[in-house]
Image (tube, rainbow over all chains, first blue to last red; front, side, top):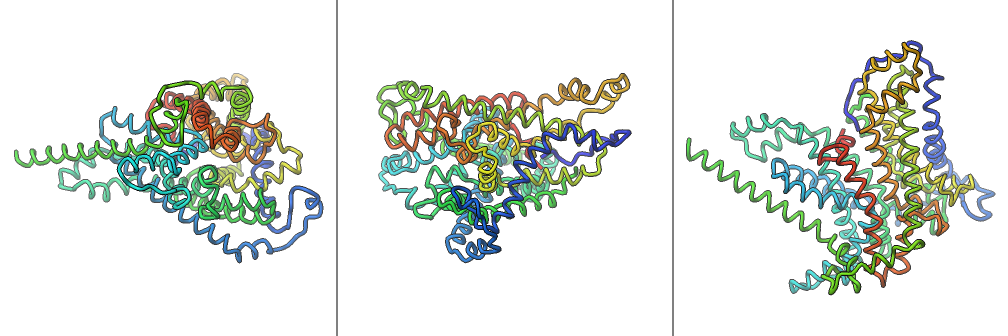
Length: 300
Length: 282
């Protein structure tokens, strides 16, 4: 998001709500109907036994906290929560974030050609559509895939990665896909770290690790917080990559919350129950979003 | 002094060598999964493993480049993604202008809400949105799906466009207002040309997101003849994925081409290697 910037001290001489609402109307209408509306409806539907298709839609009953009681006593829901936490922690917070920072640091000051070539490959993984990334990794990790061929070439025994280690598979795929984002964010932040500061510290005898810890990291702290929030939110709601690679399986071994929600709402048609899962996802997203706004103290 | 200088040069050289080895390794590891995509697409007898084709062929491309398999889905995708990008940038700019120029009492809470909304997971809203579409009888409607995609992009579009418009000095406009120009005229004639680079990045970025979005059209559109490429390729995979690997790879490349192209354009517009980082950093 754009940084803290003081808005120009511009006041319309006659502040006029009506004049502002005219141009804002299309956006407000779209946001109300397609954004605020569905979120509001989520709060309502999560407390009903709503079924959206068939005759059941006609007599929707208010069931109070039934969906949540059922949800919170369902071991499959908690399994799914745990898988989501594991997925977000290892693929986003550790994988994408740290690898992205590491790449940005290593690339700093290297030859243009090397930066360009490595950057292009890493960014390509991020630019291609998510579903294609899913196919690429499906092929890479299948029984007859590239990884097992390579391992056989080295005289090693491969395994059915997507079946035996589904979480590892989707985590690796998501690190591969998302690292570019963190790398780009950190590269931009590092380019604003003054070189003379680092050189001065170097002259004073500070090694690379101390320079990183005492100078670079404090200077990019804000960027780090915002990057962590953004990758967490993106990974939390990730659906397509896992859907293509393992479909949440085998069984439910890689069924994170978005896939659990999809199964409940669209395959078992338990809309009320599925909406309760959606509400949990939305709440986690909302908390992260609030932290984002508060911690960064964004000026508007 | 001399030995110290030698050690530090030597150390720097080792450091650089280590850095280049690491970068080389990362590049190889990241490139490996791509191997299958490119090689299988050019291979008449492709499997799931990357391997050098016995003979290079474009047969896979010609097999999927038919109207039903890929061309119509691509057109549908262009309508969906292009339409939502245009709606987003027009509605977003119109909404951002008063937020930048007028003193409004609801401005701060509104902007905070917009910023907050940029973080909400769209995936989570899809169940209620499906419900909404059923009730509005809008299921399977390309137009309604386009509007929904536009709405999901609006929060960050409004946020970024307000930032860009803040950067345009109001004095330019004031002179024109004195001469009787309306606000819409000065917005269109003076502000828009100045924020055009930023606005085009927002437009292209919205296009990229919508083009690559699978879940939204997967849930909201059902007729095979209305499906965009994102969903059509999945149907192709479900039907033929187990046999026609080469064609799947070729289809993936065709489907990826527009966004790769758009990304290259964005990099050009921003004139630097670190595309979009300015738009996303805190």
